[in-house]
Length: 148
Image (cartoon, rainbow, N blue to C red; front, top):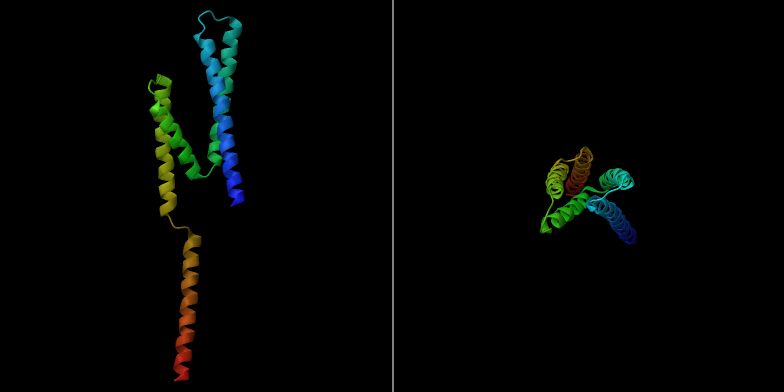
């Protein structure tokens, strides 16, 4: 139980850190882009920040894929809810919301397909269990016939 709580805490901390870095870089990009009198140094900085943002997003996707499917779905639903509740959305945010909804649909399909398909090991366990029960019943029936 304690180990499970530690895992959850690590996942939460990872999510917070990821969100903070991505938000910080995104804010820095917005601040520089909103400046009308950009110097070449600032334009170079924008390029570097955008590159950093794409790297962070790539790392985020890799980390997210390493999480269990249920956690991925929960995180994605929270992100969609946050974007949906935002009163004014930019075109980029609208596109992001659409892509996140599609990604959620794919994850839900994966979850449904993994829930409905029985694994061979499940069937083997079932057959072995039934076989053991059958053997025990045969032994009990023979003993009851001998005692009569």
